[in-house]
Length: 324
Image (cartoon, rainbow, N blue to C red):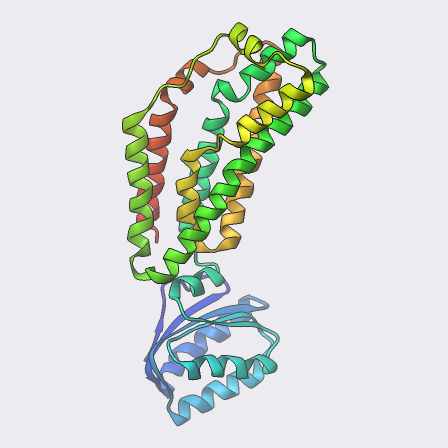
């Protein structure tokens, strides 16, 4: 029996083969394939095998005819199965087509390979929001502005130092995030059947913790900031870079853990998104504050950052659960 899966869309065909395939199955499949080929230059095929026992003779002949005629019309083919002979079959197919063919033993990995990772959109959206919120916290940029004004730095010097310190903060967050993402990837391989429940639950739990705790940030006046960091310029920059590197954005790390289920490429995409948003946000706020413009209520953000973070994580967890 051949099932056409709900993920079939655009140039992607997603199917599940159970038991033996018959001529009737190909009577259902071939019109779909030909319709896709009329609309798209190349198509992708996700072929999942569950207790698959091969083809009946007429079905095998239909499959062979189609493969010979359209061997070069496929962009990617993901074969996911349970048996060694299914993997050997995948290897045998490779010389006869230009398509990128892979055999994958876990369904979650196979769907990631063919682009079926819709929950990543909600995770990336959550990262965009948290990255922006985190950049608004004054202790990421206010000390820089205070020192720059006190020491008479040029605007170009301040922007350069702001870029370095923001990059250090982002780098510390990303290193820890990638490690957690790889942990999440390993867990996904072993517990794929529970992934659609575990990942959202983790996000919701982190969100509840952040919303409940909401610890206040340490407050310092501008004068205290200046006195604390007023050293030689080079020494001050090194101290601030180290301080930022060793204080990663822990709120984002739970999103890296969830992204691990969708592969290293999505972990790195998340790192890129977070890095661009955070660095751009911090540098922009430094420039705005240096000009003496107050566009936001930073006091409100500082006191409610944990609650806002918690709400974002809870929302991402709920959305991820329902669109898995």
